[in-house]
Image 1: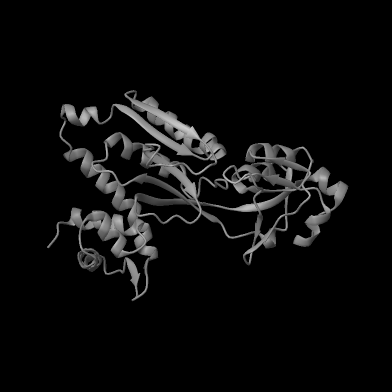
Image 2: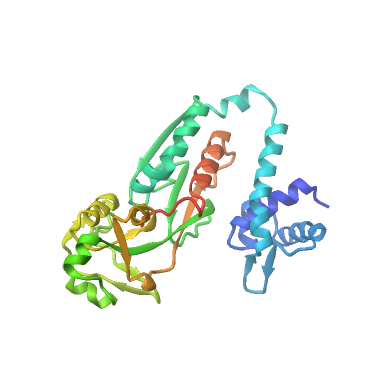
Length: 304
């Protein structure tokens, strides 16, 4: 029988993986071994940690609440058991390369990294802010942040949050042009266009029921989400903005959300790192700091 610490480690990996088979591949063990470890962990709790069917495995509410506690417990145990050796100290010295979307990086990731650098002066933070998808392996990136569907067995991936989007306009703009009541109304109103840097084409506006529109012709076009938000704030046009940029202005009564009933489902946000072994402690530290900074109740990032 496995030790309790081993069962917790297997559970934490399974909680982040798409399936027990995926978790087994990351751990270098069989899927049956993952299932057995989870069952052994469930027994003393008297609760299921995963809903298991022949086609899928989904973490339960109880399991989702246990996972962050288990990670914190394992981190504390690792810290206590880690030998105070020159090698351990050297792992906290060196460069950690990070990539993140520009606005999200500036507003959420960078403050967390600055705190890591302050507490650990031996760590050199090398952050590249770009809305283009980075070649993490070829670019020798240690930790990345992205959003949307993300399934790649080359990486250790953790879902850390979700972002909502909405259509916003200033009060002056609404007074001048009226408030749109239907998505089709946007075609007769001034709108913003956000350019996808990887394709050079504007992003579609996303709505509920998998609807997508390009409300052209645009009155303002940019490749920077913050510039787009500034244009909406300046009453140039209506824009579809990430909630983390727009909602503070809504609370300050500078912007109004319109077509709220047609808002799309939130997009998932992920922190990830390559499947390199061994992983230096400084990289794990930065990975966890970014994940904590992007927790679902604290951050809602941009399209990237």
